[in-house]
Image (tube, rainbow, N blue to C red; front, side, top):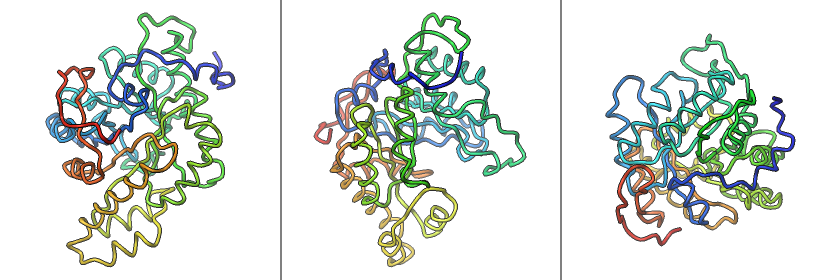
Length: 338
C-alpha cells in the first residue's frame, strides 16, 4: 500500500471511537488544557507517577515525551502506563526517528491494546542533536505519513500491508506544528497536510510572540483548518536567564520578542523565575482571546509542580478528572474557563 496522503482528507470527517477526556473536551468545543511529562533518565517509575499526581484535576491529558531531543530516557509507552496509574490521562508520543513502519504500527497497536487514549505523532529530532549523535536515524516515514497510517488503522481497521486489525484501536490522534520555523509562509499549509492526513488536534511549539502567533492563526482560520482540528498553543515559564539563552540560541523556530527579553533581564536574578511565571500567565490569558485557539499545552520541564499555579492564575479552573482514565469522576471545581 502506498504511503501517499492523496485522498486522505476524505477521512477527515470521521470521528473515530476515542472516548478519553481530551477527545471529549475538544469535541464538545471546550477549552482544552494539556501539559508535558518528561520521563526520567533511569528506571524510577515513581518519578512519572509523582509528576502525574501534580497534574490531577488540572489538565485534560499529559504528553509523555518520546526520547525528547534525541536523548535516551524511559519510553513514552512505559511512561504513559505509569501516568495512568498516577491518575492522569496520557498522550503517548511516537517519533519516526527511531522506528521503521513495522515498529511504528506495532507500538500504535500496543497503545490501543492497553487503553492509552491519545497518540501524538512526530517526525522527531535528528540523533545528531542528542546524547548519542552517531546513532543511525530511521525516518522510514515522516509525521504526515504516520498520521495517515494511524488514521487508516483506526478508521479502516487495517495495517499498511492490507491485513485486518481486529479489534481496531480507538485512540485520539494528534500532531505538532511550529508556527515560527522558517519558511513561516508555509507553516499553516504544512499543518493543513497533517490535518488532511487525519490529525484531530495539534500542539504548537512555545509561543512567546503572541502578535506573530495571531497572524499565523489568522492564516490557519482562513484555510478553514481551525474548524477541522483543535489548535493547542504551546506555553511555558522561563525560569532563568540561562534557560532564556538556551531557548533563543539552541531551540529552532522559537521567537522570543525583545519586550520579553527586556522584562526577564530587567529584574534581579532571584526574581527571574517569578517574572517568567507572570509572562506565561499573561500569554495564556491573551491566547484565550485569539480566534481559533482551542486550548493550551503547558511545557514546564522539571517544574511540573508550578503548572497548577500557572493555570489558576490564568483563570483556568480545576476540572473534573476523567473516568475514562480508569478513575472515578472527581469534582475538582467549576468549568468556568472552557
